[in-house]
Image 1 (cartoon, one colour):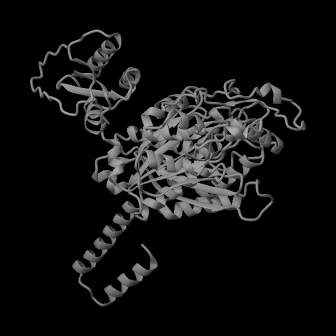
Image 2 (image 1 turned 180 degrees about the vertical axis):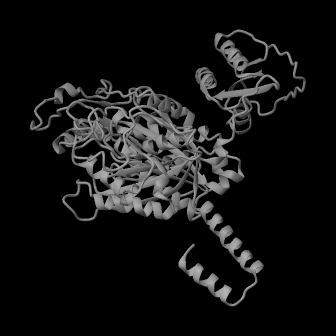
Image 3 (image 1 turned 120 degrees about the vertical axis):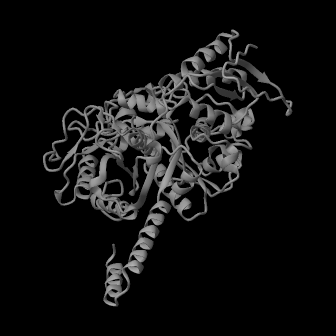
Length: 583
């Protein structure tokens, strides 16, 4: 309670205000404070990502994190460049790179333009970053259980972090200016990355592309949160993308001396020698918490606050500033009225540099372990150690990892951490880098996670999120009493098979009750031309019939796909739980 309110209450007491009136006044203050806290909280209601090592969803990412997976590979051969021509181990060689490995996505050439209403000619001219962020945004909407129409009927903003636009170099690498055509400008403009999503999905809220270097996507999230709080948006798509399409970006980072010569990011380790190249894409769907609760959305995490600032002047534009990092964290904690002691884990920027890691460690220690009074352990890690530094997309990928930690109340192990950095006194503060899975379910109902993201130009961002209480309801695992119908649809027949395969894998591993899954698919899912439907009482029965669809065999409770442009149709409603169907 603020000093002004205390003073006012004391004056009321001095004037013999009745206890009932005084209690009513205090209850009103508590109610206003509670409503204010609700308004300041943002729900994460959808997430999607794509990373190296075949990670195409948040489920894939979570499994990889729990298993401590990391992957670096040679630069892909299908991007028009032979990196062996540019490789020279000597760091001083002009126009050369001393590392050619990293975390690369191997299928960025795959894209279905027809699904989004894009012509093949235009798709060829589109920067793969635009294609990838478009696909990921759509998947994030699907992950939230929304039909696109839900977002079209509201003010939906799009905020996307993009740091490079080097796709143009592929068509102009030999000064072939005659290759420039009608689509070249929009296809290679970073400013179009967000606008294309808004245009193709008919979203009418604010739409902008953000570039603050490595903190781009975290800054995009912050701007999206503010748009929701200002009521200029009802939904937000926030994210970022990073692909390394030409040698120029690699050469420039080699000249800066920022890259690890063994292509391994060793966050907070004694042998940290720079970051590894990384690619990735991530998008989250945001909504005001009170609206998400009202609409019974699938709330995956709750963002309590975020903040951004800049280093200002200092030792150099590319050098980290510990005081500014502390300031952005303190601003974030103040904005959310968060007790630093509540934090369980910090997803650090953690680039794995001898200069940056100690500075970031102590900025965390001086804010979350203030005056060294902290009693509980604060865990510290960084996603960059798994798949490299995804630069403009690194912040959003860290937010997705943080949301998964809060949702599951489990902290995954940190990879590539074997020898603690000797520039850090690890005994001074209760901060640990987790070497094994830390399950907090028995200890914590709510897990709080902080996320830091710093840009090479000096722009800093910090965010705190926590477990959603609405997501902690016990799953209904009782199956076999009711008959459920599951409907899947796709734009193309072959894509329907892929949808079915994905659903089979999902059903095998998810703890979500079958009735919730079927409800989302039937009520909120978009209806494409090719469809299949199955009925069953358990996940096992549903999986069996989905496999029958893939095998092309007839099975009780299986409806074959429909390919019809006729808008009218016949609907059958069966109420008998002993239903037998064959078609």
